[in-house]
Length: 176
Image (cartoon, rainbow, N blue to C red):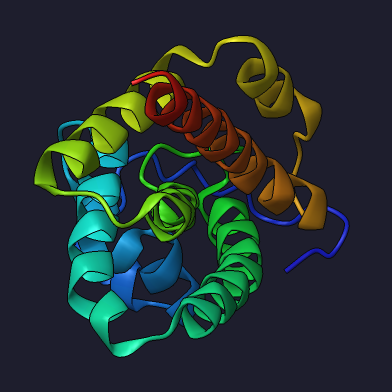
């Protein structure tokens, strides 16, 4: 192999189950397989996040849940960086770990809420993540590329989206 002219690999636009299990970073970044959804992988990743949160939150204190989210964000940064590089795509749709940690933050800070409140938070977050208004669009455009900067860019717009969703939820609670 010529080190000055490495082989060009095509971008992986639709990862397979084989790709998912080829590296631990892929498994994490693709939301344990939820990002493989052929329809709306971001929504599938957010639904996966909601399910996992509801199942594990009762076993954690608020501080422990916050620590889990912080560690998951740091590990996700690494996983998103590695997976995007291996897919040769800057911000691939199947990478959904950004939706997972962002929605966990929303649920962690907005709970307790009933099922209806959680559904509103889900729809609100998905709408903000899809439309990317104002600061979310800015965050989405801020970091592009491969390496640590690209991994941060993948996460940042969803973290800003989570913040915006929490502001809207807080205003809703204050004025309701």
